[in-house]
Length: 559
Image: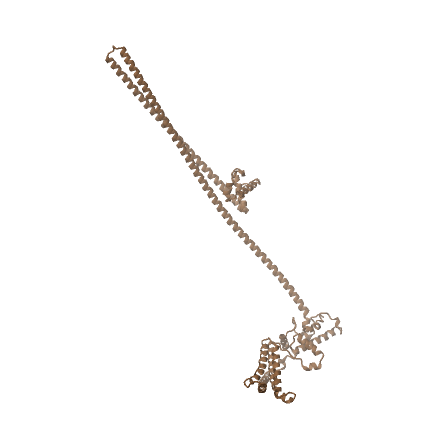
């Protein structure tokens, strides 16, 4: 037989609970039990008549108690007022003495009942009320002199305050009992005859009832009956030897001292097993919840990681965009610098051309001065020749005079004719000299014009050749820039696919600059790297060039 095979009586009458039945649940159990003492509804079919009787008795008790209390209070008041006068109180204060004594009793008891009603009783209030009651009784008993002199007279004066206190105590007991009934904490008293008939077992019975919180005497009796019946059944099962019973079967005897019923004690192992299972289930649930929380936290962490990666990609895209803008800005600056260089070159060429022209004008001026000097020299020569001619004429004149003197015989006509002939020869020689000078000047002007035309043609040819060379150089530079831009674009696409860092991109760009410079890293100036990479540190530019050289040594080729 297992522990669940409980005797029929215990099984039908005792519900299974997880803990000793509290007072608030005991009343429900007793009222539902069949055949028990507390089943008043089944054994009292004339309850309305009883309620009317109880109401009548309550009214009679209330009215009677009030009348007796009022009489006792009035007699005590009269007696204590006279005693106060005899004790030396004034006629004005003597009537207030009994009021203070008796009113204190009512006030203390009323306050005690109020605190009990609120669930915070204070026993000192009841003790104070009883002390004042004893003082009232003593004052009334001693109002006629010595108490021992006439006990009957002293008792007749002291009995009325006792009646008043008894009425108040009865009201107090009624109120407390009603409050306990409403709160479900009312406790039945063990009948006096049980103490008389069973003086040894009843104190233990009372002790268990109070320690286990059983407020119903019939319920406690039923539990005792169930325990005795279970012992008898267990003894019969094991042929009178309870030592053969298992630990689970002996549980009702062991747990009875702790307020457990037979059914509750027998159900305790199963209940504990269920609770252990619940604890295991709860532990498993907490474990699963913890695993779920960990998984959720991992998912959240993964989400945060993905979000951080997204932010990183966004930041990288923003940085790359800024770098692209910086590169575009740098390229724009480079283009502006190139255009400025071109303008400077053009201005330089213009300055060279102007200088050449100035030199040419200076040469022409010098040549003109030389021609003027030559013309002056020619003129001087002509003057010298004229002077020589003049001297020759003078000589001829002298010869003529000498001839005239020698030939005195020649006539004046012949001499005059000869003189006119000589003058005509002289004029012809001068005309011929002037014509020769004119022809020389015209030939010199023609030669200068031819040389000027030749120089202008050569300058035009040089200008056209320089413009053609400049156009060819601009075309070649544009093709070079286009090729470099295409290479840069393909390289940027490859770097975007490879998801390179900004530094790796910078190193590869410097490597392309090195390739464009002929493959020698030392030929790329650090200033160009600083300008292209938008860095201000020459050390950073030097590291870029060194890493680019290492990258090219490792086999890097621009796209």
